Length: 66
Length: 255
Image (tube, rainbow over all chains, first blue to last red; front, side, top):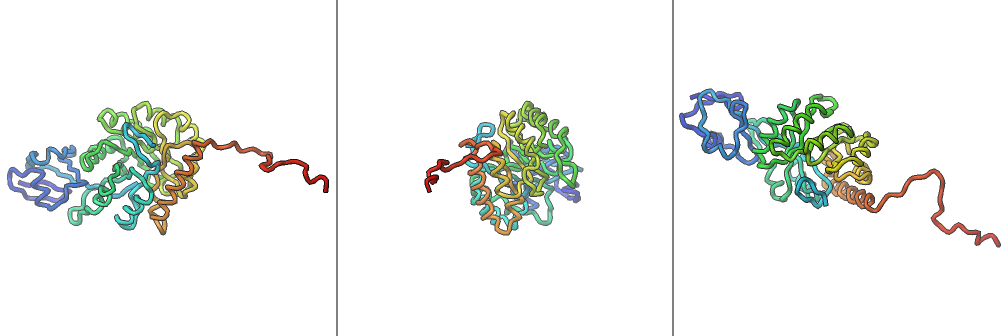
C-alpha cells in the first residue's frame, strides 16, 4: 500500500505500524511528533496504530527557538 | 523562588535556544545563566537530514523544556502545534505564541486569547507571549494562563523596555507571574525589568548573538539577580532637588 510521508510517496507492506515506519526510516523518536491525516497521534499509540492506504503521515521535530 | 503553576524554579532568567552557533555553546550558555527553563520550537522534519543533537545537551542539564508554537498564525494552528509539542517532549507546558506578521512579529492578541482559552481546557500549562496590553494580560490570566509574557520590544530587536509604562500596569495588576519576553538587548534592560517587579525575563538573541554567549549569559544572570534584589530591597524615589548624603554643617565656618 502507499502512504504519503512528509509529501513523499512511500510503499509499505500491510500491517505497518507508526513505530515500524519510524524504525524503517531510522528516525530518533526523542523530540519527534506524528500527525496522521492532520490529527496528532499520541506517542503511546505509535506501536499499535496500523497505517492505512493513502494515510497522510506528517513528522515534526523539536528544533531550537526562542 | 520563581513559582509557575505548581513548580518552583531557582532562577528568574529564561533562555531561548535559538540562534546559538552550536548545541554545545547553547548548553554552556544555559549553564552559565543558571536558567531552569529553556524554550524550543517545532518544525516539519526533513527526512533527508533529521537532527537529534539538540535535546541530549539540554536533557543532561535536568531543566524544564518549554516548547513554543512559533510559526502558528491562528489559534487553530497554535493548538495543532501545541498537541505536537506535547507529544514530542512529553510535557503539557507551552509557550503560546501567534505572530502572523513576519516583519515585526507582533503577537495577535485575538488569536492568542482564543487559543489560550482552549489550551487551558485541554490541560496545557499556558505561558502566552503577548502585547504589553494590561487588559489583554488580565484576560489571559482570567482564561487560566499560568503566567503572562508581555513584550518589551519586538522579538530580536534589542531595543529594551519600549513598553515600560504598560509593563508597570501589567505587573501591578497581575496575580500570575509576569515574564518580560522579547526585545531585551542588554543586561541593564533585564535588570530594569526586574526592578519594576517582573517575576522573570526571557532572553535569547542578546545572549545567542553575542560574540561570547557564555559570558553574556552570566552577565544577564547577574543583572536579573541584581534587579530582583533591588526590587525586594525597595528602590528610592527619584527627585529633582539634591539631598546631601554627607553632614551638611558649617564646621568650617571658623576658617
